[in-house]
Length: 289
Image (cartoon, rainbow, N blue to C red):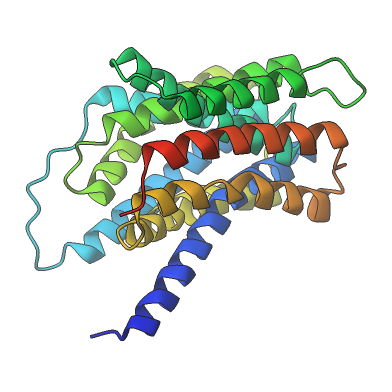
């Protein structure tokens, strides 16, 4: 049995590795696509295939001697997962690493908030203020300037964030998250093959591009999701939500260091508004336990 200190240290380690994996997805995609080492369609296909393989291998290892009766999510969840992955890849042909991660995270959180409202959730003054600040942050990010991100990239990444949010909602009733995620990745394979056929004429790959795609799928997604599932059960709801605010920050830092991407005042201020607004909503909706 782990001591209290050991339990805390393991929780910190699992959480840190999972957050690094989430940020790595943005970095690996941008590394591959910014240098034109692989096309977005091929990157998506390889990422989904390698992610499915890694998750199924992990699942097989964990299920030895166990019997799981959990039912996988509906096919719609796999469709949302595929939509997230494909728009994510194509968006990163047009966006910097930090900007893309910020839009992805912000759009996902705003979609979840909007879904809660649609379900009948009434926002408090603090929640309303947080949503307003986050929305103004998005508006400020897209104001015309020398550093304004691509509008097409913004739309694609916003769709990606929304798709991930709906995928999250569909998985809330999951009894065995790892198994359901593995099945959903597996179910994206027919869609990935269809994408491969459609984009074949424009496909180009390199060994390094394939490596980045495999690392994104097998390590950053497959292992990353597995680590997060182990970490999240150790975290309070509020802590689990708040620590994810670090992902766009980590991605932005990696983009600056690895890709020499600029850090503009517009990006910093919009990031503070978006992440701060989301934090206010999260703080109110998830009281400490």
